[in-house]
Every structure is written in structure tokens, then in C-alpha cells.
Image (tube, rainbow, N blue to C red):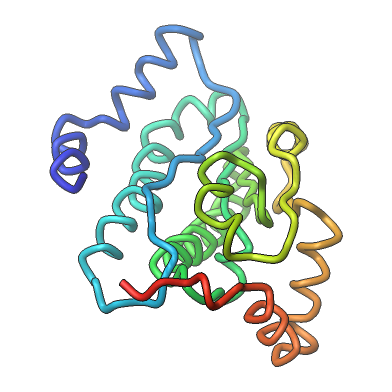
Length: 208
């Protein structure tokens, strides 16, 4: 996987994708970044290389594609939509490497948004803070290890597109669940941490 990423970077894969969009559609109104590399669900085992690999795919490639797409987005006064997670707002056990990449997305794109506003760059940045969604990958990984029900992926996809079209700064989905957890993070962090830990069926979590 790392060799593939390095090869793509050498070939300028981000710029090629953007050029293809320009050729096909003549421009770009909305950029939605929603690709991730696989990460295990387990206690962190000290594998720094795994974190490095995830950062390349889940974070650095987002930045590279955004940089390549920015001229077209400026021209269209468009929007960049970054699909993130509650794991980028709150520390969640058993997914530390994945969570690290989501925190990185929040930090970088929230800072970039501030720069755009300061410099009057008319390109919006929407950070999508998602809870558990019933995608095939999420269900395969998490269905036997968490108590919480997942939200529907079809409705989630629609909300993601709407958030970009409306130039929202952040999308919370499912709204009540995510907003409640963020409120607990600010006002009752110990309670939130206990709530998160108790959501896992720890007996089903493997040590790698």
C-alpha cells in the first residue's frame, strides 16, 4: 500500500485526478474528500508504520488533492467537503491510528478555513463530523464490538452533499447524537469517556 501511495505521489496523482475533472466537466464546483485506508480495531500495538501509512492516505492525500483543485474551486467559488468523524473530535479507544488522521484533518482544514476567510478566498470548507454510519466497511469492522446502532448511509450521503452546497462550516450527523457527545466533551468529559468505553464490547476486542 505504501509503495502504491509513493508511486501515485511521484506521478502527481492528485493533479491528474483534478485535470480529469476539468476535462470531463470543464471545472469543479464541489470537492468531496472521503477516501480512507483500512485500519484495524484493537489495542494499539506500537506499530508506528501503520500510523504513517494511514496519514499518507487519510490526511496527506486530502491536502494534495485540495491544493491541486484550488484554482478551479476559486474560479467557481466552490466548496471543499472533508468527511471526518467523531474520532477526530474525541479520543476513542481501539482506533488510535485512525483517530490520529481524523484529528489531523480537523486541525489542518479548520486552520485553512480561517486563512481563506482572512484572505477573502471565496472557497468554503465543510468538515463533516460523522457518528457511526452503516456502511459495509463499518458494519464489518464494528457490528460485533459496539452496542450503538448505526445511522443510514443514504441519508448521510445526502446530508454531506447538502452541507457543501450550503457552505456550512461543520456538519454533524446524526445531529442529536454527535452534538450531545460534543456537549459532554466540553461539560462532562469524564462522563463522556466512560460512555464511550462502555459502548464497546471489550471482550470482542483483539490484541494484535
